Image 1 (cartoon, rainbow, N blue to C red):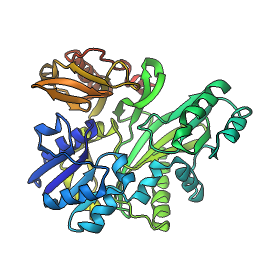
Image 2: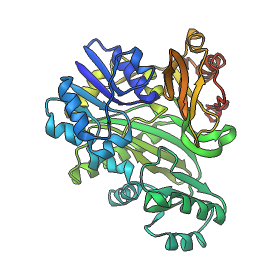
Image 3: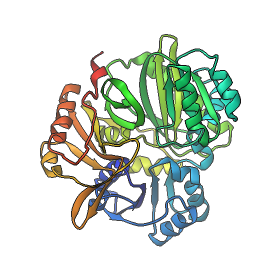
Image 4: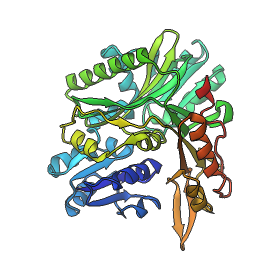
Length: 415
């Protein structure tokens, strides 16, 4: 099977790593790819936000499957274009209408209401004045969200009115502002692989969004994650399965072609499970955890889902714990880190961990930084402590100027 992955982050490196192990694979391409994906197949330069360019590339490479990694190509309509103009090539990724669950948070909230999905109370504002007036009198703390894509950084939790108004002003350039009730509880993420009819729920994870230890600092695209989570139980599994079923029913009722991953951001409150958000693709860094935890070949599941023929045969998951810790540049999530030499990857991998590239590049044969989140380091073990120990042991060997990572990933796992 000839496969191309769209994207250039650690998620795409993890996908390439898992797909490259498939006996069904004959050729693997990543566009644009990164330093890590280049070791597993061929990186191809292409504007992956240009549907026509991606279609042309899929035809030229005679591809059997395109796996869309990130949200931006889905919003651009890449999956729709391939299905229309190169039907023999299957696409793992929803249509633009399906991906609207992620690229429009206002639409997602309306969808949740329409199909009876439990979520936080909210208000949407298309103008700054009414939003500021509402923030002057609403209960605190409050959550302020941008409507459009913001690379995981379009959410602010405001504890004062000044913070709320500042967040609304900062996020207003994305368009509609969503102001949500602040929910107390534990967060969890559940990813669902689906062809629009059949689906497979993957093991729940816990993500760490804030930049700094103790869940302090700004929201990021994700600083770490782990699975399994000790507090998950049969009741939560059943409640999540009901949300998945209602979501798929709603998508079909809307006439949406959805073949890919639905990511559920959940809050486990004293009043039951609440749906915080949808994503329309594998999360990053959740993908790195899940693909490490998956036993067996991922490629048949991706291909069958893309063709609308997902098997009922369950996916097989290791009982191991898996954790990921993200190493980022010193200015993240603000400015990227560029051209800082990176050392120690071979020594890190010798400890047994996996290292997935994100913001890296080669400059005259030297590995250097080239982004915000630089590397994802994955550990696994028979316990959460063992998985974390392996990931952090690997990180002690890696060095670049300004390197920052959280030292408390998994700290909530024992509670």
